[in-house]
Length: 176
Image 1 (cartoon, rainbow, N blue to C red):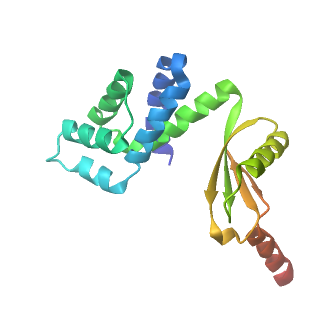
Image 2: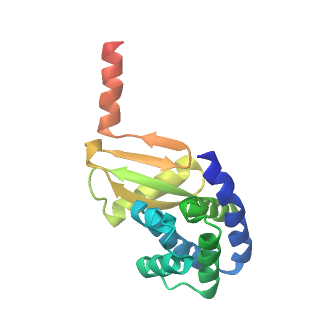
């Protein structure tokens, strides 16, 4: 959604510039706020004309359960006062992209049909870092529909070695 990206960019850039001293700490509380702001019920509550900005602020901080530093509180208050709460998840995405670009890292999401043990995850992460040519912040999400194997998403690149993908390839080959 280009409009949200356009709205979010100045907020993400300003937060990135002001948080240069503690990017990791800022990313932690910003992730918590982004997760809360992605909730449809919260957005509906915030759009209610009878609800004040202070009430929205109180609900978000209570639900986030993140110890917001003063800069975080000011940032959240600014976002709410300007009516930009729906753009907060996109602000988080753009902030992470700026942080990753500075450190030469990328976020990688590994979708797996089954839980991955820590030792196996470390080995897979090493292989993926060599494959993609950069350090990766790896997160794992379970997706039983894959049947087996993994699907890796790094930015706009996808590496799909799942059984589901192979079955789809065979289906296309057989019907062609």
